[in-house]
Image 1 (tube, rainbow, N blue to C red):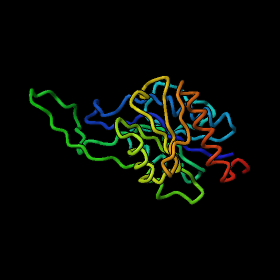
Image 2 (image 1 turned 60 degrees about the horizontal axis):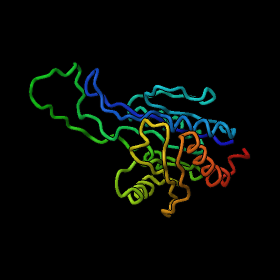
Image 3 (image 1 turned 180 degrees about the vertical axis):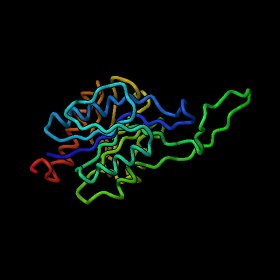
Length: 216
């Protein structure tokens, strides 16, 4: 049995007490991956941003809001896990300053200065033990395979799942999974539950079983 950490859903970066930056990620893929892993007898921890769905009750769920909170939760959990599936869509930017009061209209343009949030997968890659494995996700709109491979290498992933913006808040998805050499080792399309099962079968075959986690 493997112990698997899965990130899921979006994060929120607040501009003021009521407004925030986010995206339309629904958490459906993370939820489906958790279900696929549990169905094979593995232990699952899900670190999720705000979503409107219920994760499998057998998974241990950690709720977070911001990207920094997601990173902190993952750092706490990852040391006790065999691998990470980073299916979340965390915000890449946050405002330089967060207003203490609701921003009022002035009739003038509002200039926001944004700074990058930490890269969760890249940070965990530095901290991981040699036997731990990492699976990343890349949502790309152009030069998709090249950009996904760059992310795989930058984040030291073992596999990366490439999809497009049509996956956001949708019931279906079409993905390609790339290995460290840039080879497409899986192409899957259909309902997210079906795609998740195919992705997890690949992860189990290529990453979990070779490390012997299924025999522990």
